[in-house]
Structures are given as C-alpha cells and as structure tokens.
Length: 138
Image (cartoon, rainbow, N blue to C red; front, side, top):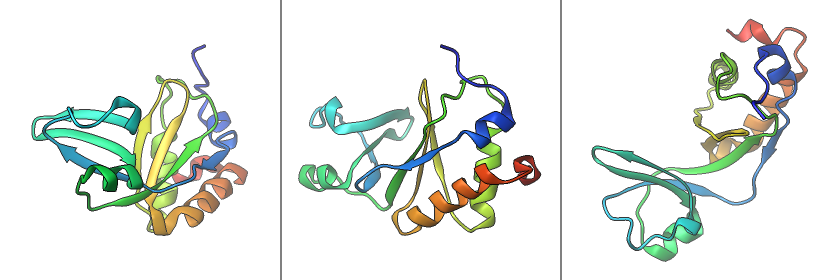
C-alpha cells in the first residue's frame, strides 16, 4: 500500500492519537546497552546516535536527556511521497507556539511535542482537520 498523497484528504483524515507515556530524545555513542525493543526509533548522526525511548526506560538505563515529549500519531496512512502535510501541521502548531519533532514511518507520521503541550497540540491538530480550508496554513 502506497498511502494517501492528496494533501486536503491527508489533513482532513489525520486522526491525531496521543500515545500513553512520556518519551525522551537522547544522543548516545554506544548502543550496546540499549535493546532495540527499548527504542521507538534511532537516527545515526556524526556526533552520535539519537534514540527516542520511553522516559522510564531511559531513567532505568541511566541515559541523560533534556527534552521530555509526548508522542502523537497521525492515524492516516500517508504516503512517504506526499507533499505538504508536515508543512501544514507544523505551521498550525507553530502558530500556537508548540514545537514539534516529526518522524515519518512507513504508514504514519509521528509528532513529538513538549509533554506540557500534548493536549493543546492534539486540539490544534483536530481543529486543523475540521478546518474548512486547511491549506490556509501554508
């Protein structure tokens, strides 16, 4: 399945879902003490490997972090080739002074926002989906 590419359909079908728990981003130079089952995702950078994992697991492993996030999944199956979805929801969140860190999976987009902004972010995204002209955010 290739997923949806029509921007208006994507926005109107986002169905943002707040995942339970708190998540952190950390940079590590050695992954040997971290099980793949512990990580939500990993990204290799020149300075180290960024891992996203549940806060409780990071604490148990003694991994330091600075940012505690909530995880929102957009339930629409978006195509990896779709154009504009990230721009539209990131702009809407920015207008509400909510930062977002986006991860694209094969089926869904995942948004990490400051834990204190989680419900407000979901409300903004739901409002965007209900907007008569969601492309006005571009």
